[in-house]
Amino acid sequence: AQKVTQAQTEISVVEKEDVTLDCVYETRDTTYYLFWYKQPPSGELVFLIRRNSFDEQNEISGRYSWNFQKSTSSFNFTITASQVVDSAVYFCALRRGRSNSGYALNFGKGTSLLVTP
Amino acid sequence: ETGVTQSPTHLIKTRGQQVTLRCSSQSGHNTVSWYQQALGQGPQFIFQYYREEENGRGNFPPRFSGLQFPNYSSELNVNALELDDSALYLCASSLAGQTNTEAFFGQGTRLTVV
Image 1 (cartoon, rainbow over the protein chains, first blue to last red):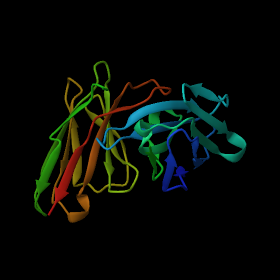
Image 2: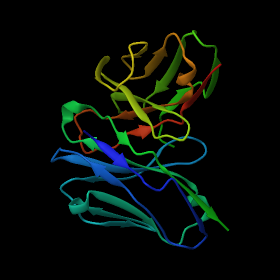
Image 3: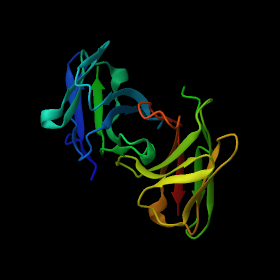
Image 4: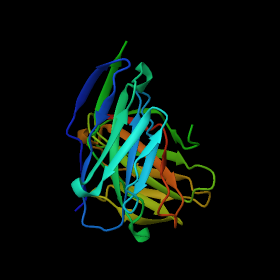
């Protein structure tokens, strides 16, 4: 079974604070892909990052960074020096690695981030 | 912008009616997936279409059906609407055969069933 848990329902921070969004996943597959998407109030899901199960290298993109740890089945997302524009719902998602499984993404319930001035 | 467009953006229907939602995929993408997102929840996979055939389905009843056209655009049809069908419906396009690619989402259609 594939499952993604985002235990933090809502987070509120003041601008310029760092914030980490947690994601824990469950899968029996050896090959899989993990994703983070951002959903602003407009509704569209905006792709942020994809990480495959064989690549545990952490990644940094500007103020965003991701920490992937297979030992704890976690794929956490950190925003450094948060800004008001970062306010959105963030989703972590898991996808099976087999090409014949389609592109079905299993999403967590999301974490709503509010950044106030 | 992702290049994935959905229509309409909002829709109100009465319980028992039928509805058709439309999606144009991103240029070069040949696979379309549909998701249902209830308020406060993560998106749930409905089904996927590739080469005009359904090739993956989530836990949704048969009254949820779809089509994919030769230009890779797609429709989601829902018959006998129920109140619980009220949700944001998201379409995503991707490129089949590329397991390490991402899906790009449209802005969604917000369906309200009254």
